[in-house]
Length: 152
Image 1 (tube, one colour):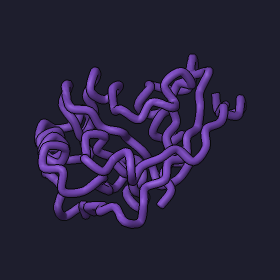
Image 2: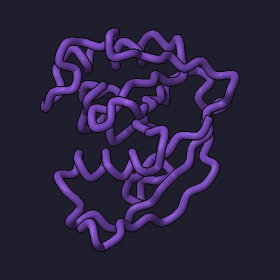
Image 3: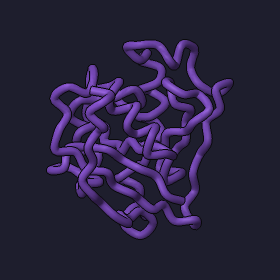
Image 4: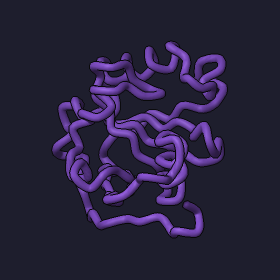
C-alpha cells in the first residue's frame, strides 16, 4: 500500500514521528510519536493547508511516498467506532487517548481513520515504534512540492 506525506523538505526523509511527538496532533498527545499520512496526494495538500492555517508562507515542501508492506496489519476505524465529536477543532482528548493507546499496544503498524476534511477519504497514522516498522515501512520516493500559485 502506498500512502503520502507532505512536509517541510528538511523533515521529509524523517519517519520517526518526531514532529507529532513534539507538538501533538489530532490522534496523539505531546510525547507520543506518530507519522501522519494520507491515502491521496490531494488529501495531503488539503490537510497541510488546513493544519497550517493556510498556504501563505508554506514553501520548501517535499512530497514523500511511503510503502506499507502488505504483510503489515492495518487497523481501520470507521466513523461509528470513533469518539464522540472526533472531528471537532480542537480535537477532543478522547482522540488522543485512542492514538496513544494504539502506539502502546503495537498490534498493528498503522490505523486508518476518515479525514475530518473529507470523511470519504482516509488518513493512515503509522506507528514508528512498532517492532516491524523498519521492515514494513519504507520511503519509495521523495520530491519537491509546490502549490499552484492560483490557490495561494
